[in-house]
Image (tube, rainbow, N blue to C red):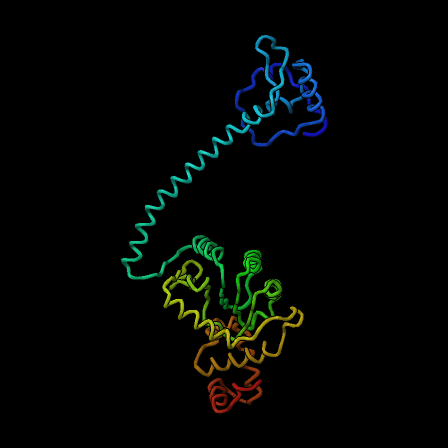
Amino acid sequence: MSGQCKNVKWGQMCTEKDQVGVTQLPELCEQGLARYREALVAGGVVADRVPDCLVDLGLFRCMPDNPGSLVPVPPALATASLSRPIERAIMRHQDALMAIRATMARVEVVYAEAQQSGGTSVEVLSGESVIGAALEEAVQSCREELLTAQPNGGRSPELLAEALPRDLALAARGVKQRTLYQHTVRGHGPTLSYIERVVNAGAQVRTLDEVFERLIVCDNKTAFIPGPHDRRQSALVIRQPSVIEYLVKGFEQAWSRAVAVGEAPSRLRPPLLTDETRRAVLRLMVEGYTDDAIAARLGISRRTVGTHVQKTSEVLGSRSRAQLAYLIAQTDLLDHSI
């Protein structure tokens, strides 16, 4: 409330309560301060001269023997009256939190026993919201290093907008971050913008033609990998040290083969975007993979796969896919730029 408050009416003031619940504290106007100072000096004030804000703040009370007058209340008493219901609500919430934790502590015992009896340190998560919450908690607790492998090309702007503040906060805490993408992200604007921000904050990002699988490892203690069925709705949380060590070794091998991303987005279109991708397409074709399978593994479209195959066929003069595979296998084309 700004400016002058409206004068309160007697009927409104005489229904005051001993405890006032406040959801939004009324603003104390200059006229209210002047009336409060006047009442302190005079010992009271006529009811119709008291602004709303003073009554709402509990700074005036009715005089039992003189209903037409109000007496000022010390600020400490008014503060206690306003605070009391809020403090009680906080205490109720604290009691509820303690009850939740006590109940869940008993459930945690049963859960841990079941996990141990199964002889595994693998937890199955189902549902995007459950997976997201578990990932968020693990990443927030990360203190030393976060490793991630993100296949399937560029990420959606929505996912990048969600990940950016989290990853920048990790960098600010001094957490080392290393991320693997496929070469195809070098042509994806939103992903490049995200990479530029996190690299400037201290993260390291590299790309290679084919990422083995999606992976997140926090402090070499907790790992997340896709579940066995619907990969968006299922995930595995792994805490077994030997399994995590195995996954990290695979990451390190891929990291050693990857190419660093450290340039501005306008310069992130090197020849390897075509040369390396084409070699990967041809290698998988020679190994017998279909165009659909190649596209899925490299994070590119089926049409792009077909384009690479067609251009190589034109260079070698092959008239069929089988002949092309034979010619490639008999040469060292996969070891040189095409």
